Image 1 (cartoon, rainbow, N blue to C red):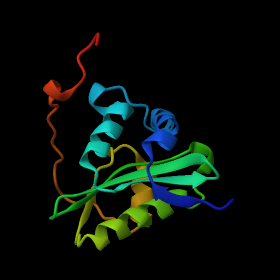
Image 2 (image 1 turned 60 degrees about the vertical axis):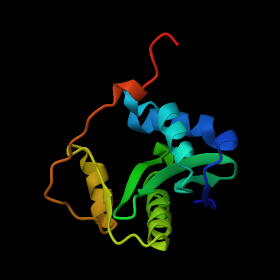
Image 3 (image 1 turned 30 degrees about the vertical axis):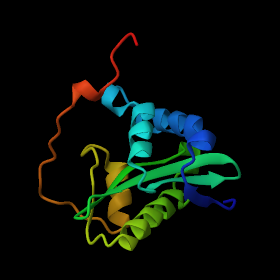
Image 4 (image 1 turned 90 degrees about the horizontal axis):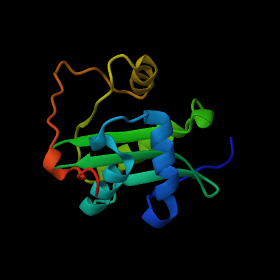
Length: 149
């Protein structure tokens, strides 16, 4: 594998590639998961916890992390399908974990679709264990773009 670099996300340099990657890997179908919205919201937080893996100038992977002072979270870990199983995802995960640890984080959470066995196996191989809890969510429609605008 060619050299990869993990750096902070730069909206001017990386946005289009990240949107394309996420659409390819995650196949989002809901408005609240639209890549552009997720990117814009993360940029607004300005916490420095959005990273891209580059091979040359090409984005080959991403990871976002979050920290609220109590728990850390991993979001949007994605790797180009042709680059999967080459250590890129593990390197991105480790980079995010180190960034969270540097902020004082003592526990990291993440969510995976239960049927996605391949991804579950990846996280188990990287030291994560299943928590016995129910994930719940509520869409805040008032914060989504209005259709036709």
